[in-house]
Amino acid sequence: MSTLLTLQLLKKYNLLEKTKVYLIDVSENVIVATQKCDFFLPESIIDPKLKGKIFKKLRESKTAICSAEKIPWKNNTFHIILAGFLFHHLHDSTKPIVANEIIQVLTPGGIVAIAEEWFKNYEEYAKNHKNDKIPLALESIISFKKLSGLFSELEITYKTGTNHKKNFYAFCAQKIN
Image 1: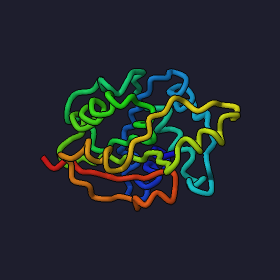
Image 2: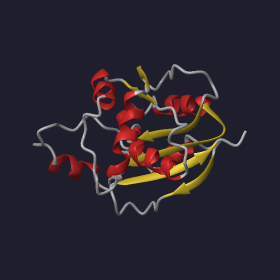
Image 3: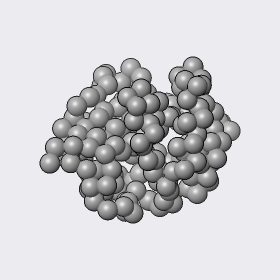
């Protein structure tokens, strides 16, 4: 969803055609499904007139099936990095490694946008979803304060409220040097 919203926003500023999309995931199935555009497109959020252009970008995307612990691109490669609901899937000891990898491949002046799950009472949430058709992954929820602290060398330029009334938070940070 974060990729779709970003591509839609880039079109608004006439940057979509210039944009190259890179996808990274540990799951080949996720990469293949994304490149085949085999997912629900919420037309109430994404302009249906952009569907063809957005899907073309996804089909043409460069991919890496790997862990974000070692991003396979050179330092200072990307102007925009999206990490949508990634960090709660990582072991606590791995979170700083992944944050550092993101910072390394981000260009000076580049932006990282992060959205992450948050629950006041995750145990209650997990209990309510224990019978879901697709079980919850083993998750390690991280607070806004702890996650944004992993990016302390970047300047946070945007953040959602952190009062946790919703089950997510987001922030954008810029690499200054």
